[in-house]
Image (cartoon, rainbow, N blue to C red; front, side, top):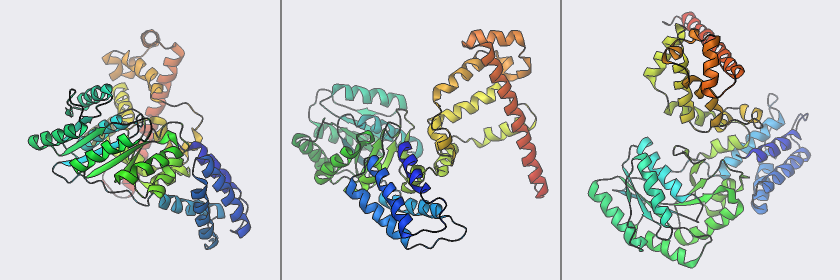
Length: 441
């Protein structure tokens, strides 16, 4: 995500390297490169120029402290202005109705149905709501079946009427059922078209008029770039939607839509979605996105994702096992599962400042864990509990059972032993630190 833009912006900031202060000349040179980078990222030229003019004005008015390099100050100014461009702060999400009604709109293929499913899961698991999904796309039968299947996966009810071709009636009947069953939120998945047309606009406007939604979310495929911004504007002129959802941010996107959609339609981005997995929906934070665009990572989001998977009881049990040097393959497999639950591994590592750039050319995906998992799952219960049992004969059996070479099995076991030693030494350092401070171990 935004890798090309990151590289171009880094190149722009390098023009200030070696300069002791910001001057009109070196600012102008840097700003010119920033503008080029934004235009290449599919930002409208007019918006790119307005943005860089603000950056230039702000930079000229700043005094560089002796402890701050000009390049560092320019990055700080860029972070501030990018955050403003994308909406400044995270937007509120209104789910206070009884039930709250959320209308999901967008073009066909933008990811509306997948987002509806992700939002239902988000509301159920993170907001502790009881949602109902309504299948109101009457033109694509597969959309109804898709939503039913997705609903079963997350144990969320789907209201549908396969024989009814009136989406307004279906939406109203769905809301009535939610009220009858005491459900908290109704999410209406509507039909999309391949392009904006009058019939589509009339239909979605009618659903809005009759259901009086608390939130109208326009779903945008971020891979469509500037076209997504133009489509959002057309929808907003008719619907006056309350927020935008950017999907497929893990794809080959140049980032222009994410940067400028709020500026263009004056509506906040409320959610961003990456990948197909149900737990890859996140609230949009403009400052965090600005940090990622500038290659500064997003450690706050990383910690939040880690905390979602954190189990205090299990963590204490694990700490005790590490302290006694009893960490085994079952523990390792458990930790691996928690990491995978947090999301795409490369995206997660990219949130850590400095790591994203270092691994940009490294192929890291969830499949990278499969070899390790296969080796561990080929072990007997006693081997997983006691790694010391693994002799040459057992390792050969593991290699055959997991479809790996004996060299790969040996390499993994060696890495596991090194990791155990490192964890043990870190635990000792932690205990020593507590003792020094006079705290109990």
